[in-house]
Length: 332
Image (cartoon, rainbow, N blue to C red; front, side, top):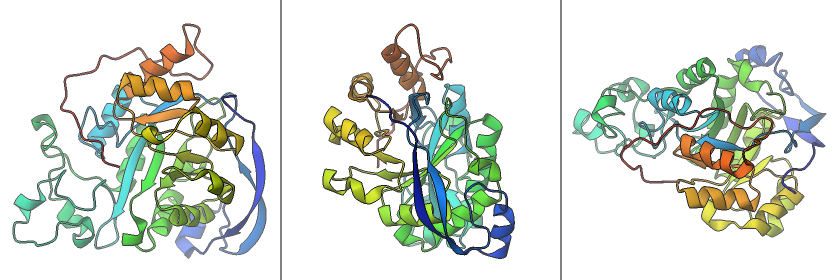
């Protein structure tokens, strides 16, 4: 059975926030603006039968544009994505920026701009310094001068493009308190705390390979679905009833594991699936979608899987041919 019904759970909510955050959260669903510890019912919206299978566009649209940039978000929409995935880290002065790697080396010209700096870790640079970097030329000359965006800029652009979001917290142990900073940023844009109707993709999912940090984020954002990245051992699934998704590497799962996840109330969208054979395989396993650098190819695979008659809520964009772009290495 591909989908299961809605599960309602009661979780212990503990939220300590500052006054500005609390003011922004006053009307956010499921949040405790006073920062008190209470017991409340929280709707854990596990897979609704109407929710569509989706191809989540990885790092913006990493197969078509420089990853984790506004140009990447634009490309995701252009190639028909409904939902994008981005990575968030923190600068030395505490600003949230989009970046996958712990260093700026692979995707910017930091070594040219700051040749005398020993460290190229984003945590050792201020936002003003990061702003001086070119995050597009490494991918293609046409993207020369593309900056590293802040999380706020990315959220605004995704709202303009009507894109949903999988937000990955990268290595939160390197950035103590980053979950709270992300929460504060989301509170300033409460539209991200609202739920889409069940026949559309989820508006926002927060995820991380650090499951303790994911749990911490869930306490601050109890109404927001959270996902565990990586393969959770079968004998530990019952420990994570507060989570909505388990999103493992697609090479580590099979149909039995997907079925077990569904039996425990989890959705699953494996990463990072870039071949058509891999897409077909995870769909046959019964996955609720998958994460890919090529959202156009992903949507074609989903349409073919669902058949000519389609399905309510399935992507209806016309198939877009893949462009001859440089291949981007899949880094988790």
